[in-house]
Image 1 (cartoon, one colour):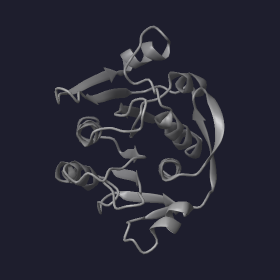
Image 2 (spheres, helix red, strand yellow):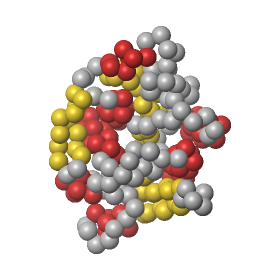
Image 3 (cartoon, one colour):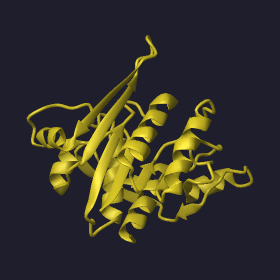
Image 4 (cartoon, helix red, strand yellow):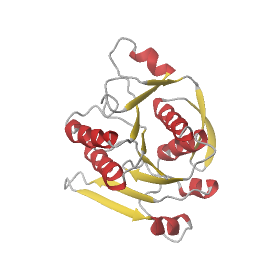
Amino acid sequence: MKKVGIIDSGVEVAFLREQALRLAGAASFTLDLDSGELETRIYDADELEAWRQGTCALEVEDTHGHGTAVLSLLHAHARPWPDVELYVARIFGHQVHASSLCLVEALDWMLDDVGVDLLNLSLGTTEDGMEAPMREVIDRAVARGAVIVCSAGALPTLPARLPSVMAVGDLELMDRVAGKGVKVDHVVSERTVRIYMGGAWHEAPMTTSYACAVTAGGLLRGG
């Protein structure tokens, strides 16, 4: 059975209920800007099922919507949904912004502790300070056979610029980065997508984040 992971803003429990999806594991990573301390919460399948049934609240609920939109695309483009274990790591809150330290810790958890086979990273950072630990954990995972799909950026970003990551772009991005030396390994040609966000389905313009999830879903469908 394959293990599939998403690092993003969590997931709306309403989407899990609607699609009859269950999480095999989840975690949240939060950096206290005043103390500089990283807070990590890891949840097992039983805790997550209680949350899905509405008997408790956990720090993986998506208060922004981006992570849910990403999961909805991966789910839609992998149909028929295969027999997989699904894992979610929440590093974003109300705004899609997080410390690179949270990202590295989430990568460690997803790739080393959980050992996912396919990881969706609809995100990126221009901060170079965490490149070495990020590269180390990603290269180690790819060496054992994991596939890591990441959004390309308008500038060379991490982790997309790492050789071992599949960097994904959309047509608009390709127009913007022509001749700028941005690494793009795969381009999604669709201009719009249908996403689940904020408790409902919406038509939305294609972005690199969404293109990443579309690509990951296709890889999952193809085995």
